[in-house]
Amino acid sequence: MAGPAEAACRLALLLALDVSSSVDDAEDRLQREGLAAALNSPVVREAMLGPGPVALGVFEWSGKWQQDWMLHWSVIETSADLDAAIARLAASQRVETRYPTAIGYALSWAQRAFRTAPQCTYRTLDISGDGTNNDGYPPESTYKYFDYSDITVNGLVIGGDPSVTLYYRDEVIRGPFAFVEQAENYADFERAMRRKLLRELEPRAIGWLR
Image 1 (cartoon, rainbow, N blue to C red):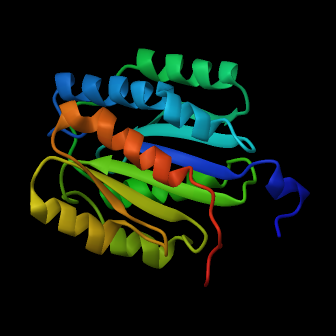
Image 2: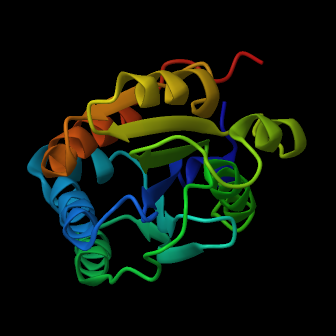
């Protein structure tokens, strides 16, 4: 059973958006607007707002050293809290445009980011992308040297390349409840993100088994 500190927050949810050089400006805008719209959908709002608060963080990632907060950890307890987070995400601007895809580094940056998160019963990283790792060390190395023992990693693959989906399933996602969601393209990002958020916000009947 969760203690008082844990019970104050049911989920620390960290979302990671791909801004590598394979993502053009129009596709990046579809991600940002799609995420904001997904969070603002009635079903996600209902799931986000109860029971118990959610700590939400969002960052963009690309190359080895290119990770930037879009929304620092924000505790979502009320509609006003969620509205403020949505407005910030919708107004956010891309920081990087020309770097490759360093998924391993994004994962290690995220693990460090969780150290500053509010104490919550569960911790989930939700990483979106349209390609495989092509810069720096791979996800396997991150999981070897960084403690992900109590962090679930889910993936959202953008595009129809089955090899990328397989890569995310085999190399990126982690944890007994982990899954990969698929967006057909960037125009489909909102639908896929909404579906993924609903799964991540579902009440969990059991915790980690290891």
